[in-house]
Image (cartoon, rainbow, N blue to C red; front, side):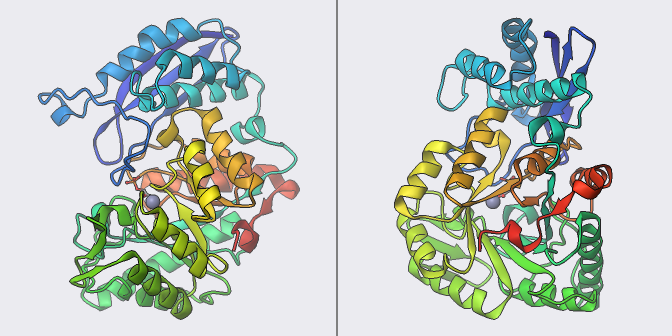
Amino acid sequence: RIRSIHAREILDSRGNPTVEADVTLAGGASGRAATPSGASTGKHEAVEFRDGVKERYGGKGVQRPVSQINGEIAVTLQGMDAGDQAAVDEALIDLDGTPNKRNLGANATLAVSMAVARAAAAAEGLWLWEYLGDPLKPLLPVPMMNILNGGVHANWQGPDFQEYMIAPYGAPGIAEAVRWGSETYHALKDILKARGYTTCVGDEGGFAPAVSTNTEPLDLIVEAIERAGYAPGEEIGIALDPASSAFYNDGVYNLRTERLTLTAAEMVDRYRDLVAAYPVIVIEDGLAEDDWDGWRLLTRTIGDRVELVGDDLFVTNVDRIDMGIRKGAANAVLIKPNQIGTVIETIAAVRLAQQQNWGAMVSHRSGETVDTFIADFTVAMQTGHLKTGAPARGERVEKYNQLIRIEEAAGDTARYAGRSGFVR
Ligand code: PGA
Ligand code: ZN
Protein backbone atom coordinates (compact mmCIF):
# COMPACT_ATOMS: atom_id res chain seq x y z
CA ARG A 1 0.00 0.00 0.00
CA ILE A 2 1.23 3.49 -0.82
CA ARG A 3 1.86 5.44 2.37
CA SER A 4 3.32 8.65 1.00
CA ILE A 5 4.53 10.36 -2.13
CA HIS A 6 6.93 13.25 -2.20
CA ALA A 7 8.35 15.10 -5.20
CA ARG A 8 11.03 17.71 -5.71
CA GLU A 9 12.62 19.80 -8.44
CA ILE A 10 16.09 18.54 -9.42
CA LEU A 11 18.44 19.20 -12.37
CA ASP A 12 18.81 17.18 -15.56
CA SER A 13 21.98 16.69 -17.61
CA ARG A 14 21.50 19.99 -19.46
CA GLY A 15 21.15 21.84 -16.19
CA ASN A 16 17.41 22.28 -16.58
CA PRO A 17 14.96 21.46 -13.79
CA THR A 18 13.03 18.22 -13.84
CA VAL A 19 10.74 16.23 -11.55
CA GLU A 20 11.89 13.55 -9.10
CA ALA A 21 9.40 11.55 -7.01
CA ASP A 22 9.77 9.32 -3.96
CA VAL A 23 7.12 6.74 -3.15
CA THR A 24 7.07 5.04 0.24
CA LEU A 25 4.93 2.00 1.05
CA ALA A 26 3.29 1.09 4.33
CA GLY A 27 5.79 -1.72 4.84
CA GLY A 28 8.71 0.73 4.55
CA ALA A 29 9.88 -0.13 1.02
CA SER A 30 10.42 2.85 -1.24
CA GLY A 31 11.16 3.82 -4.82
CA ARG A 32 12.57 6.93 -6.49
CA ALA A 33 12.37 8.01 -10.12
CA ALA A 34 13.03 11.10 -12.24
CA THR A 35 11.57 12.20 -15.57
CA PRO A 36 13.91 13.00 -18.49
CA SER A 37 13.34 15.78 -21.04
CA GLY A 38 13.72 16.06 -24.82
CA ALA A 39 15.07 18.83 -27.07
CA SER A 40 13.83 17.64 -30.46
CA THR A 41 10.41 17.01 -28.99
CA GLY A 42 7.66 15.60 -31.23
CA LYS A 43 4.66 17.89 -31.50
CA HIS A 44 2.25 15.05 -30.65
CA GLU A 45 3.98 14.17 -27.37
CA ALA A 46 2.20 14.36 -24.04
CA VAL A 47 2.67 17.73 -22.36
CA GLU A 48 5.77 18.40 -20.28
CA PHE A 49 4.55 20.99 -17.82
CA ARG A 50 6.85 23.99 -17.21
CA ASP A 51 6.01 26.84 -14.85
CA GLY A 52 6.69 29.58 -17.40
CA VAL A 53 7.82 31.94 -14.64
CA LYS A 54 10.67 33.82 -16.33
CA GLU A 55 12.48 34.68 -13.08
CA ARG A 56 12.99 31.02 -12.23
CA TYR A 57 15.09 28.88 -14.56
CA GLY A 58 14.09 31.07 -17.50
CA GLY A 59 10.53 29.76 -17.28
CA LYS A 60 11.57 26.10 -17.19
CA GLY A 61 10.82 25.53 -13.50
CA VAL A 62 8.68 22.54 -12.54
CA GLN A 63 7.29 23.74 -9.23
CA ARG A 64 3.72 23.32 -10.38
CA PRO A 65 4.03 19.65 -11.44
CA VAL A 66 5.93 19.03 -8.19
CA SER A 67 3.14 20.58 -6.14
CA GLN A 68 0.54 18.60 -8.12
CA ILE A 69 2.35 15.43 -7.02
CA ASN A 70 2.66 16.54 -3.40
CA GLY A 71 -0.99 17.57 -3.37
CA GLU A 72 -3.67 15.99 -5.55
CA ILE A 73 -1.68 13.00 -6.78
CA ALA A 74 -0.42 11.99 -3.32
CA VAL A 75 -3.93 12.23 -1.90
CA THR A 76 -5.45 10.19 -4.74
CA LEU A 77 -2.89 7.38 -4.70
CA GLN A 78 -2.51 7.07 -0.92
CA GLY A 79 -3.60 3.62 0.27
CA MET A 80 -3.55 2.10 -3.22
CA ASP A 81 -1.78 -1.19 -3.88
CA ALA A 82 1.60 -0.32 -5.42
CA GLY A 83 1.70 -3.82 -6.91
CA ASP A 84 -1.25 -2.96 -9.13
CA GLN A 85 0.54 -0.74 -11.61
CA ALA A 86 -2.46 -0.68 -13.94
CA ALA A 87 -4.78 0.65 -11.22
CA VAL A 88 -2.25 3.26 -10.13
CA ASP A 89 -1.66 4.46 -13.67
CA GLU A 90 -5.39 4.48 -14.46
CA ALA A 91 -5.88 6.66 -11.41
CA LEU A 92 -3.24 9.07 -12.71
CA ILE A 93 -4.81 9.07 -16.18
CA ASP A 94 -8.28 9.72 -14.73
CA LEU A 95 -7.06 12.42 -12.38
CA ASP A 96 -5.45 14.21 -15.31
CA GLY A 97 -8.51 13.69 -17.47
CA THR A 98 -7.01 14.88 -20.78
CA PRO A 99 -5.69 12.92 -23.78
CA ASN A 100 -2.22 14.50 -23.53
CA LYS A 101 -1.69 14.92 -19.76
CA ARG A 102 -1.93 18.68 -20.01
CA ASN A 103 -3.50 19.05 -16.58
CA LEU A 104 -0.92 17.30 -14.45
CA GLY A 105 1.93 17.18 -16.97
CA ALA A 106 3.49 13.93 -18.16
CA ASN A 107 6.62 14.95 -16.27
CA ALA A 108 4.59 14.68 -13.06
CA THR A 109 2.68 11.48 -13.86
CA LEU A 110 5.70 9.56 -15.18
CA ALA A 111 7.95 10.25 -12.19
CA VAL A 112 5.21 8.92 -9.89
CA SER A 113 4.35 5.96 -12.11
CA MET A 114 7.97 4.81 -12.30
CA ALA A 115 8.60 5.38 -8.60
CA VAL A 116 5.54 3.25 -7.74
CA ALA A 117 6.92 0.37 -9.84
CA ARG A 118 10.30 0.71 -8.13
CA ALA A 119 8.72 0.69 -4.67
CA ALA A 120 6.63 -2.38 -5.53
CA ALA A 121 9.72 -4.20 -6.80
CA ALA A 122 11.63 -3.25 -3.66
CA ALA A 123 8.77 -4.51 -1.47
CA GLU A 124 9.09 -7.92 -3.13
CA GLY A 125 12.86 -7.87 -2.94
CA LEU A 126 13.14 -8.02 -6.74
CA TRP A 127 15.18 -6.18 -9.31
CA LEU A 128 12.99 -3.81 -11.27
CA TRP A 129 13.42 -5.89 -14.44
CA GLU A 130 12.39 -9.06 -12.59
CA TYR A 131 9.32 -7.33 -11.24
CA LEU A 132 8.27 -5.92 -14.63
CA GLY A 133 9.06 -9.00 -16.71
CA ASP A 134 9.79 -12.72 -16.54
CA PRO A 135 12.60 -13.27 -14.01
CA LEU A 136 13.67 -16.37 -15.93
CA LYS A 137 14.00 -14.63 -19.27
CA PRO A 138 16.13 -11.52 -19.12
CA LEU A 139 16.95 -10.35 -22.63
CA LEU A 140 19.90 -7.96 -22.65
CA PRO A 141 19.50 -5.36 -25.40
CA VAL A 142 22.01 -4.28 -28.02
CA PRO A 143 23.23 -0.87 -26.84
CA MET A 144 22.60 1.73 -29.54
CA MET A 145 25.44 4.12 -28.75
CA ASN A 146 25.18 7.61 -30.13
CA ILE A 147 28.82 8.48 -30.81
CA LEU A 148 28.38 11.47 -33.13
CA ASN A 149 25.84 14.21 -32.42
CA GLY A 150 24.38 16.78 -34.79
CA GLY A 151 21.20 18.82 -35.28
CA VAL A 152 19.77 20.51 -32.21
CA HIS A 153 21.84 18.28 -29.92
CA ALA A 154 24.98 20.00 -31.21
CA ASN A 155 23.55 23.48 -31.68
CA TRP A 156 23.60 22.88 -35.46
CA GLN A 157 27.41 23.05 -35.43
CA GLY A 158 27.67 19.57 -36.90
CA PRO A 159 25.61 17.59 -39.41
CA ASP A 160 21.88 18.09 -39.91
CA PHE A 161 21.30 14.50 -38.88
CA GLN A 162 20.94 14.40 -35.12
CA GLU A 163 22.37 10.99 -34.18
CA TYR A 164 24.91 8.52 -35.55
CA MET A 165 24.82 5.38 -33.45
CA ILE A 166 26.83 2.17 -33.36
CA ALA A 167 25.20 -1.17 -32.58
CA PRO A 168 27.71 -3.81 -31.39
CA TYR A 169 25.35 -6.71 -32.10
CA GLY A 170 28.14 -9.22 -32.79
CA ALA A 171 29.37 -9.15 -29.19
CA PRO A 172 28.76 -12.21 -27.00
CA GLY A 173 27.08 -10.24 -24.21
CA ILE A 174 26.31 -6.77 -22.93
CA ALA A 175 29.54 -6.17 -21.02
CA GLU A 176 31.51 -7.03 -24.15
CA ALA A 177 29.19 -4.94 -26.32
CA VAL A 178 29.81 -1.96 -24.05
CA ARG A 179 33.56 -2.53 -24.37
CA TRP A 180 33.36 -2.74 -28.17
CA GLY A 181 31.33 0.46 -28.22
CA SER A 182 33.69 2.30 -25.90
CA GLU A 183 36.74 1.23 -27.91
CA THR A 184 35.10 2.43 -31.11
CA TYR A 185 34.16 5.73 -29.43
CA HIS A 186 37.79 6.30 -28.45
CA ALA A 187 39.03 5.30 -31.90
CA LEU A 188 36.65 7.88 -33.35
CA LYS A 189 38.05 10.49 -30.98
CA ASP A 190 41.60 9.80 -32.22
CA ILE A 191 40.49 10.00 -35.85
CA LEU A 192 38.67 13.31 -35.28
CA LYS A 193 41.68 14.76 -33.48
CA ALA A 194 44.00 13.71 -36.31
CA ARG A 195 41.71 15.43 -38.84
CA GLY A 196 41.68 18.66 -36.88
CA TYR A 197 38.07 18.29 -35.74
CA THR A 198 36.90 19.22 -32.28
CA THR A 199 36.31 16.38 -29.84
CA CYS A 200 33.84 18.41 -27.77
CA VAL A 201 30.62 16.47 -27.23
CA GLY A 202 26.92 17.14 -27.81
CA ASP A 203 23.96 16.63 -25.48
CA GLU A 204 24.09 12.82 -25.61
CA GLY A 205 27.86 12.49 -25.18
CA GLY A 206 28.74 11.88 -28.84
CA PHE A 207 31.34 14.02 -30.59
CA ALA A 208 30.05 17.05 -32.45
CA PRO A 209 32.50 17.81 -35.29
CA ALA A 210 31.68 20.48 -37.88
CA VAL A 211 31.56 18.05 -40.78
CA SER A 212 30.57 19.32 -44.21
CA THR A 213 28.11 16.61 -45.23
CA ASN A 214 25.68 14.26 -43.53
CA THR A 215 27.49 11.19 -44.89
CA GLU A 216 31.00 12.17 -43.75
CA PRO A 217 30.23 10.90 -40.20
CA LEU A 218 29.47 7.47 -41.69
CA ASP A 219 32.94 7.30 -43.26
CA LEU A 220 34.51 8.42 -39.99
CA ILE A 221 32.55 5.82 -38.00
CA VAL A 222 33.32 2.93 -40.37
CA GLU A 223 36.98 3.87 -40.03
CA ALA A 224 36.66 4.01 -36.24
CA ILE A 225 35.04 0.56 -36.09
CA GLU A 226 37.90 -0.86 -38.16
CA ARG A 227 40.56 0.93 -36.19
CA ALA A 228 39.09 -0.50 -32.98
CA GLY A 229 39.50 -3.96 -34.53
CA TYR A 230 35.91 -4.84 -35.42
CA ALA A 231 34.18 -5.66 -38.69
CA PRO A 232 31.69 -2.99 -39.84
CA GLY A 233 28.40 -4.64 -40.69
CA GLU A 234 29.30 -8.08 -39.37
CA GLU A 235 30.12 -7.20 -35.79
CA ILE A 236 29.09 -3.58 -35.41
CA GLY A 237 26.31 -1.91 -37.40
CA ILE A 238 25.33 1.72 -37.71
CA ALA A 239 22.01 3.38 -36.88
CA LEU A 240 20.85 6.88 -37.78
CA ASP A 241 18.38 9.25 -36.24
CA PRO A 242 18.19 12.23 -38.59
CA ALA A 243 15.30 13.56 -36.41
CA SER A 244 14.11 15.07 -39.66
CA SER A 245 11.09 16.91 -38.21
CA ALA A 246 13.68 19.43 -37.04
CA PHE A 247 14.71 20.36 -40.60
CA TYR A 248 11.34 19.87 -42.31
CA ASN A 249 9.50 22.99 -43.36
CA ASP A 250 6.66 23.64 -45.81
CA GLY A 251 6.79 20.14 -47.23
CA VAL A 252 10.55 20.00 -47.86
CA TYR A 253 13.69 18.92 -46.05
CA ASN A 254 16.40 21.57 -45.66
CA LEU A 255 19.89 20.12 -45.31
CA ARG A 256 21.75 23.20 -44.13
CA THR A 257 25.18 21.55 -44.11
CA GLU A 258 24.90 20.60 -47.76
CA ARG A 259 22.88 23.61 -48.89
CA LEU A 260 20.22 21.29 -50.27
CA THR A 261 16.45 21.31 -50.18
CA LEU A 262 14.95 17.87 -50.83
CA THR A 263 11.47 16.46 -51.29
CA ALA A 264 10.40 13.35 -49.38
CA ALA A 265 11.01 11.25 -52.51
CA GLU A 266 14.53 12.66 -52.82
CA MET A 267 15.19 11.94 -49.16
CA VAL A 268 14.04 8.35 -49.71
CA ASP A 269 16.47 8.03 -52.65
CA ARG A 270 19.26 9.30 -50.42
CA TYR A 271 18.49 6.77 -47.71
CA ARG A 272 18.32 3.99 -50.27
CA ASP A 273 21.81 4.94 -51.56
CA LEU A 274 23.09 5.32 -48.05
CA VAL A 275 22.04 1.87 -46.86
CA ALA A 276 23.56 0.39 -50.03
CA ALA A 277 26.91 2.07 -49.31
CA TYR A 278 27.17 1.76 -45.51
CA PRO A 279 26.26 -0.88 -42.90
CA VAL A 280 23.22 1.10 -41.77
CA ILE A 281 20.60 -1.20 -40.24
CA VAL A 282 18.30 1.31 -38.53
CA ILE A 283 16.92 4.68 -39.59
CA GLU A 284 14.81 6.54 -37.04
CA ASP A 285 12.71 9.55 -38.04
CA GLY A 286 14.10 9.55 -41.56
CA LEU A 287 11.04 11.61 -42.46
CA ALA A 288 8.98 14.14 -40.55
CA GLU A 289 6.31 13.56 -37.89
CA ASP A 290 3.30 14.21 -40.16
CA ASP A 291 4.76 13.18 -43.51
CA TRP A 292 2.74 9.94 -43.67
CA ASP A 293 3.04 9.66 -47.46
CA GLY A 294 6.80 10.04 -47.27
CA TRP A 295 6.95 7.38 -44.56
CA ARG A 296 4.93 4.96 -46.71
CA LEU A 297 7.26 5.50 -49.63
CA LEU A 298 10.31 5.02 -47.42
CA THR A 299 8.85 1.81 -45.99
CA ARG A 300 7.96 0.45 -49.43
CA THR A 301 11.45 1.29 -50.69
CA ILE A 302 13.77 -0.02 -47.96
CA GLY A 303 11.48 -1.39 -45.24
CA ASP A 304 12.40 -4.94 -46.21
CA ARG A 305 16.08 -4.28 -45.43
CA VAL A 306 16.18 -1.64 -42.75
CA GLU A 307 14.50 -1.15 -39.40
CA LEU A 308 12.55 2.08 -39.82
CA VAL A 309 11.76 3.52 -36.41
CA GLY A 310 9.08 6.13 -35.77
CA ASP A 311 9.87 8.47 -32.88
CA ASP A 312 8.24 11.88 -33.44
CA LEU A 313 5.90 10.01 -35.80
CA PHE A 314 4.43 7.75 -33.10
CA VAL A 315 5.36 9.46 -29.79
CA THR A 316 4.82 6.15 -27.92
CA ASN A 317 1.09 6.62 -28.49
CA VAL A 318 -0.95 3.51 -29.38
CA ASP A 319 -3.38 5.50 -31.54
CA ARG A 320 -0.59 6.84 -33.70
CA ILE A 321 1.17 3.46 -33.82
CA ASP A 322 -2.13 1.95 -34.92
CA MET A 323 -2.37 4.52 -37.69
CA GLY A 324 1.17 3.63 -38.80
CA ILE A 325 0.31 -0.06 -38.91
CA ARG A 326 -2.78 0.62 -41.03
CA LYS A 327 -0.91 2.92 -43.39
CA GLY A 328 2.18 0.73 -43.72
CA ALA A 329 4.39 3.53 -42.42
CA ALA A 330 7.57 2.35 -40.59
CA ASN A 331 8.22 -1.10 -39.13
CA ALA A 332 9.37 -0.17 -35.63
CA VAL A 333 8.48 2.19 -32.79
CA LEU A 334 10.71 4.26 -30.56
CA ILE A 335 9.61 3.91 -26.95
CA LYS A 336 10.06 6.95 -24.70
CA PRO A 337 8.06 6.71 -21.46
CA ASN A 338 7.82 10.49 -21.04
CA GLN A 339 6.20 10.91 -24.45
CA ILE A 340 3.09 9.25 -23.01
CA GLY A 341 3.40 9.68 -19.26
CA THR A 342 2.77 6.36 -17.45
CA VAL A 343 4.38 2.92 -17.26
CA ILE A 344 1.30 0.97 -18.37
CA GLU A 345 0.75 3.14 -21.42
CA THR A 346 4.42 2.63 -22.32
CA ILE A 347 4.00 -1.12 -21.95
CA ALA A 348 0.89 -1.00 -24.17
CA ALA A 349 2.91 0.72 -26.91
CA VAL A 350 5.64 -1.95 -26.69
CA ARG A 351 3.09 -4.77 -26.79
CA LEU A 352 1.26 -3.33 -29.79
CA ALA A 353 4.52 -3.12 -31.75
CA GLN A 354 5.53 -6.64 -30.73
CA GLN A 355 2.13 -8.12 -31.70
CA GLN A 356 2.68 -6.76 -35.22
CA ASN A 357 6.21 -8.14 -35.34
CA TRP A 358 7.40 -4.58 -35.40
CA GLY A 359 10.54 -3.49 -33.63
CA ALA A 360 10.40 -1.60 -30.33
CA MET A 361 13.46 0.42 -29.39
CA VAL A 362 13.45 1.90 -25.92
CA SER A 363 15.09 5.31 -25.61
CA HIS A 364 16.43 7.91 -23.21
CA ARG A 365 15.95 11.65 -23.84
CA SER A 366 18.66 14.18 -24.61
CA GLY A 367 18.05 15.73 -21.18
CA GLU A 368 18.56 12.86 -18.71
CA THR A 369 19.24 12.06 -15.08
CA VAL A 370 21.08 9.07 -13.65
CA ASP A 371 17.74 7.25 -13.33
CA THR A 372 18.13 3.79 -14.91
CA PHE A 373 14.47 2.81 -15.20
CA ILE A 374 14.69 2.30 -18.98
CA ALA A 375 17.57 -0.18 -18.66
CA ASP A 376 15.52 -2.54 -16.48
CA PHE A 377 12.40 -1.83 -18.52
CA THR A 378 14.12 -2.87 -21.76
CA VAL A 379 15.39 -6.12 -20.27
CA ALA A 380 11.90 -6.92 -18.94
CA MET A 381 10.07 -6.06 -22.18
CA GLN A 382 12.58 -8.01 -24.28
CA THR A 383 12.75 -5.30 -26.92
CA GLY A 384 16.25 -6.29 -28.02
CA HIS A 385 17.76 -2.82 -28.29
CA LEU A 386 18.09 0.28 -26.14
CA LYS A 387 19.42 3.66 -27.18
CA THR A 388 20.81 5.70 -24.36
CA GLY A 389 23.60 7.81 -25.76
CA ALA A 390 27.35 7.63 -25.97
CA PRO A 391 29.49 5.31 -23.85
CA ALA A 392 30.49 8.49 -21.99
CA ARG A 393 28.94 11.05 -19.58
CA GLY A 394 27.40 9.89 -16.29
CA GLU A 395 23.72 10.08 -17.19
CA ARG A 396 24.34 7.97 -20.34
CA VAL A 397 26.73 5.33 -19.00
CA GLU A 398 24.65 4.73 -15.90
CA LYS A 399 22.08 2.91 -18.06
CA TYR A 400 24.74 0.79 -19.75
CA ASN A 401 26.32 0.08 -16.38
CA GLN A 402 22.96 -1.10 -15.06
CA LEU A 403 22.74 -3.55 -17.99
CA ILE A 404 26.18 -4.89 -17.04
CA ARG A 405 24.95 -5.40 -13.47
CA ILE A 406 21.83 -7.18 -14.68
CA GLU A 407 23.83 -9.48 -16.94
CA GLU A 408 26.14 -10.33 -14.07
CA ALA A 409 23.32 -11.01 -11.61
CA ALA A 410 21.26 -13.03 -14.09
CA GLY A 411 24.20 -15.35 -14.80
CA ASP A 412 23.33 -18.28 -17.05
CA THR A 413 19.77 -17.16 -17.71
CA ALA A 414 20.95 -13.89 -19.35
CA ARG A 415 20.68 -13.81 -23.12
CA TYR A 416 22.10 -11.07 -25.35
CA ALA A 417 19.77 -10.09 -28.18
CA GLY A 418 22.51 -9.58 -30.76
CA ARG A 419 21.41 -9.29 -34.38
CA SER A 420 18.00 -10.80 -33.54
CA GLY A 421 17.24 -7.66 -31.55
CA PHE A 422 16.33 -5.96 -34.83
CA VAL A 423 13.31 -6.63 -37.01
CA ARG A 424 15.40 -6.38 -40.18
P1 PGA B 1 15.23 14.33 -27.73
O1 PGA B 1 15.94 13.51 -28.87
O2 PGA B 1 15.30 13.58 -26.47
O3 PGA B 1 16.01 15.62 -27.71
O4 PGA B 1 13.81 14.57 -28.20
C1 PGA B 1 16.01 12.12 -28.89
C2 PGA B 1 15.50 11.55 -30.19
O5 PGA B 1 15.12 12.31 -31.12
O6 PGA B 1 15.46 10.35 -30.32
ZN1 ZN C 1 14.55 10.39 -32.40
